[in-house]
Image (tube, rainbow, N blue to C red; front, side, top):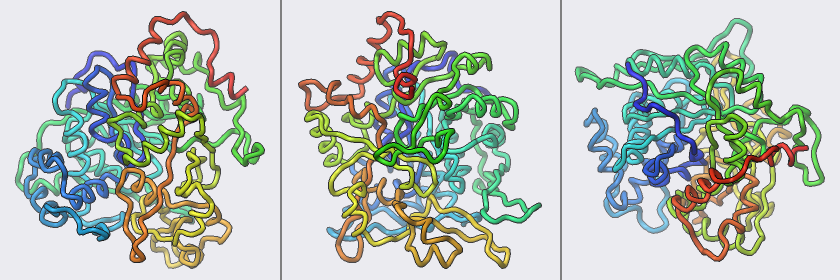
Length: 494
């Protein structure tokens, strides 16, 4: 096992956004310019099979699958899901089994090859660095997703939305193709009960010799000094740095220290206690990057002046030409940004995870109350389901965004379902892969962005569109700026 092949860390990290918003095309573009391109590993098995069912335009997925070291797996996946002419008009996507504590070998392999494909495509045509972003909260697919990314030579692993203290040790073991486990959070577990997610890579090789792997760098995404210190002291392996995420970042945010306080829009209120002490972070002796409100030339200059290695940027990259967002959704936001008519709400209840979630306010999306109320509740992707202990001791799964009666029968409460939105289906719709239902209706989307979206119109100027290169050149202008004495994020929180 060797270290990832890089002598220095990148200055700019492209955020790992949504489901395939940070897809391989965006990550490849950023990595090719000397910074860290990041693919989203969330729901990557569903992304793969839907691309195949849409005919794999350009043949990119199949090209990457030809490089997968277990070719029988590639053959099986193609036979099961690939439609050369794409789906018939109006036809739904063929579903795949939802994750559970224990899944079939075929399910593991589907996730492994999906992750491999995404990273392989992102690494094509350059010698730059590529990372994969995962949510700690989405526990059940993570071991298989990590292994597939490592088979493709991923350079960095980024993880937020939870406390990923078991992941450094997992990376150590997977780099040696050794069995790895993480604890499965099970609601209602009794004292002394431990539930594990186990994965043995070698069961998939069956006589083949697995390749040598590099252990990627590991960067947890955190929002407090205490969590940074805990990760350094208690993680089961090496932590290589931190991404310090402010509550202005898109997607899921850490809840504020002071609970129950909201503003006039019902948004959770963040204050001085939520501002991370960068001097204390620096004392840990590890590189760190600032995220959330830092995606500007001034933000980059401030980060460097504060001792950070650089910044992580999501929102600007999310709407560039290489983004995985569907053409119609991206165009709608760009037009609204030019008109100064974009709005982002920090929704404290929308996400089934319980974390605050940034939501772009758009008509015809789940942010529209009428659209939300009209949608029939269904849970058929299940990435955000929570494991719980039944009265008979068995493990089952529930999600507060599933049908209310179903959730209540599983021991949940009606109150727990109020305002919950199906992020799994909505985020697939963001990238043009919304499921077609029996009534002919396509799943509505729900878009997330950081507060930086409010400045997108200013960045656009007279342009109607822009590229990842435009974003990089804009940010690098910060290297020529004079030092800034205060953080715009801290100023906003204060």
